Length: 398
Ligand SMILES: [Zn+2]
Ligand SMILES: [Zn+2]
Image 1: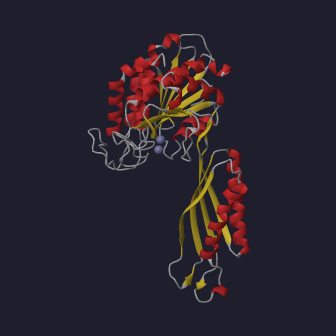
Image 2: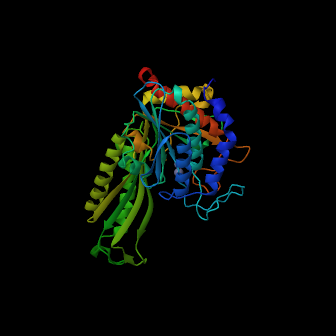
Image 3: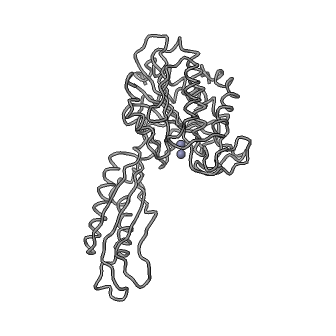
């Protein structure tokens, strides 16, 4: 455990906590991160970064040209948005904005980002290439990563590797999850409208019962994962909402189903989408009904490439011992940094922030979510180390 950056990061602990708590008290929803972005931009400017604001509406990009020769560019990503949740924690740094809360830990990510910016700026002379910091708006379902990509994030200078992290209330303080492949799932929305023919509940022979058709479709859809997908590949098709009918003696004309589709690869995703349409349309046709199947594409699976992941693993090993680094965990949650990792090889890792003794165990997006802030310097050290290793060409030998 000899991370070249850990001591420096740890010496910033009070500052990192202060930044995180200030942001926690003043959370901002997606694409409204005006105060947060201003704090970030001022900090980066003061550290000597070339700063670009308004990238993807409220996003901020910081560029630092290292002092050593090197033509690689590594991007480090930190998301900034909060959630529409009323905080239930009774802490001195409780959210001051009614109905808005940093319940996913993005306040911690911004604090880590400012820590990384500070440490790397101090080591500018030793950096063989370019650091590009991505402070991203609107991760929580609003497409902030894509908005920044559409505004040219990945070009001028072109990004070679992309790294990011998420604090995790599932994993104890002093641990990390660093894995190659998919860490988080693709997440798409499903909407099915069944068009039948309504009528009297006592004369079914004159109708096409949309409720019955919907019920058959729901059951049949569960065969898609169990019969069409390789059992080695996790996948989920959930119908979470059904709306149809008004009265017990009336056969409903239409039924609406809403659901979510999760999986870890684009190949499985394509099979799921195709089979969901075929099954819904086929069942409906067999029962004399029509269906409209709409799949609303959400985030891609968050897939880390082997070489940058090996580099992050090495950097994590300088901070945590081997048995504290989980290399197999994955979750069917979604993350929009996947949009960057679809275009540039990189790694997204999780940093344990759970503390049972202190009761810091609530899941992300819970009104009682909180983290153990001792994780912050560890995140700073791992990202600084991994970034410099990527620029130094360690990904070529990994
Ligand atoms: Zn979240
Ligand atoms: Zn999050």
